[in-house]
Image 1: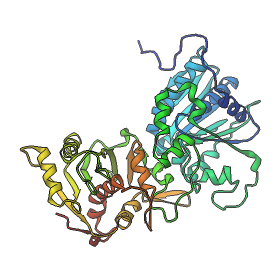
Image 2: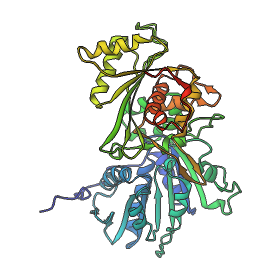
Image 3: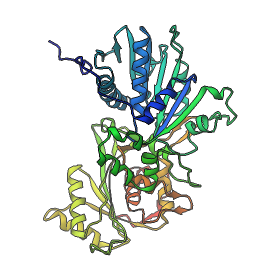
Length: 453
């Protein structure tokens, strides 16, 4: 006998209630506009509201078809299919049985409606999903989705169901003001031509933040979000777009596009490194002005680099040395790359002392150029958009690294504009340089990295 579906819910009385802000936004979703965007911080309830609206529409219009899309298929399955859909069904529609059609890629709703879930990175799946017409299309986490993919998806918003108006939904944790969602919804301009929208009344947007969903969140979550570094706090706590610095080497949009899950990392890794930036460490508990940057990264057999961990710490030498060696062992690394400008052979000695009687490979590197110059070839590997299509994007962040990414956003061609030393970002640069820049040789001059051993 087959195991019960994740989507089967025993009949019960709903005990869920929208917050005051969520009720107001629910009314917005019922408005006359075709396109609706919700901009907001993490855990604010954006995805929940849109999923609830889609289920409501699917139940109200038998035989209708709806799509919930993210950039990456793995993320769509884990966050939408396995998490949000069953959660919304249980809390808001406990009497409804949702049936999985896993092999086909959709969830069946009583009355024959279908909710398709997928990613835009899987060509075969995309062709299958976009080969049909829908009454609703929900683009989830638009900070990761290029505008070209949005335009293609919109062409499938065409299922004619009596009494059910077409709707396109969008959400994101806000990135920079140059993002296409800000241009289209906030500025009211076409993201490509920059001209005013022909039908501005068809676009509506609203902001929401975690405080608006406080009734449904643990107090610890709210405290954690409120304590994030400034840029990350504005994005995930305040839920507002941010102006980008002139000549930025990295933008929120670029970093968000690089985001992936552990499932996206190739099983076979060609090379793994632990990079250490010990600059500015005085070695006493109360006198260290900077932290010891420790970043683990790998190059996959697919040719991409994966940032696996940020283990940056504020510890004395013997403690951070142990942390480096533990990371080397845990991730089965090939080598440890450490900057020698501050401490020289002391850095190697600290790491070897932590390794005990065995010898671990330590490659000392010396910075002969400024931080921004060293960072530029690495930032180039994050790629860029050309007419809405990403080109040259070869770096992936496996999860979120708030403090590391906050430092990356303070880099510009004019230098580092942050308030403290970019220890985490420096370690990232050393790691990616070792994995991707130096092996390519033709990408950037080796003269900027003197003293490799």
